[in-house]
Image 1: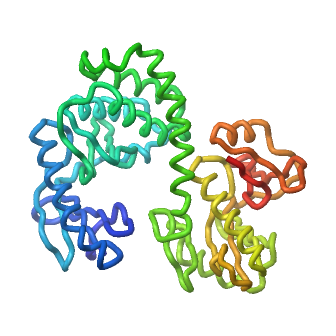
Image 2 (image 1 turned 90 degrees about the vertical axis):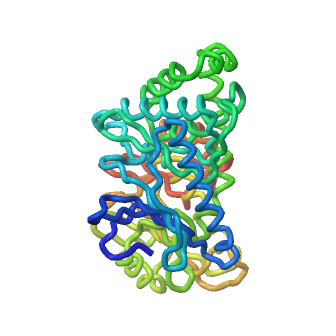
Image 3 (image 1 turned 135 degrees about the horizontal axis):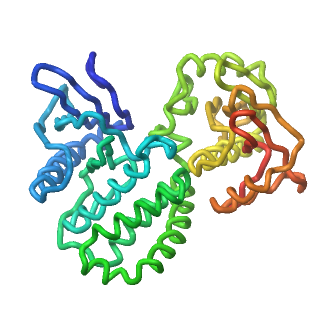
Length: 382
């Protein structure tokens, strides 16, 4: 969808975001094109809603990109915004990056400013908060934002619960606490009074965020079985993890017919292990393994990642199906039980590891990544 020479930032079903550099300067461009004809009927409403949201946010003095143009382009709706150089999504900030604590604190202050201004972002998550190396933060994606009287209680807490839930599994506690303190200080005085004592609020948000994240991952697990931000549809209707290269996809598909369960394919930088099904019952079980691996990936558990599913696992037909899971290049199976730290991590995510034979299940191990769970070895019970 992006024109030649553009720098693609994000490609999702129905929309894309890229950067164009030219004589007129540098602009971020967002284009809507829903997959189906019915969905495209709503592209205009989505584009206009985002245009209005950005303009209103600018009027309120909030840190958002300046909207420059909205109109039709090649049959699609196109929104042009000023591009802020040097920014990246909060979700892309690694905990060990220099200035990572300051980045989370800046994002927290911005969230408080949005809430003080009465901006209710319907899709507040780390991907919609941009940070730079100078302690600044910017909000994007205003298509679902509503503006009104600043909230003083439940709505504030709901937004923070979701945001903390999205961050807690990959961000150290010290980052989250620093961000929480900045958010609290940046709220209006009447909002702090409505929320109650700070210590009790933080404890309640932490508990609610854990449960909210569990529910969200479970509710959205079907994203691994359809075209989505996580999965693209490959040749023959195969489910392919979105960031798996076409070369690796071809290499795994070529081994489909000769593979057996447990077959290993070692490619530069990764090892792939296959699970095979030839009956309807096995295909249903294969789908459970694929979804379990997706949940482990969503919950940031050290585990084999879903890579490729061929032959539509889960269908009632008795044809041959296969799923491939990705592990580090040096991974190998061991007979060691699931490590206590790994079991504690699964419990924190709302899962219990129950081996099919009732014994402690084996794990895979890697010198670089440590112990890893393979979904085919465990039943993950919520």
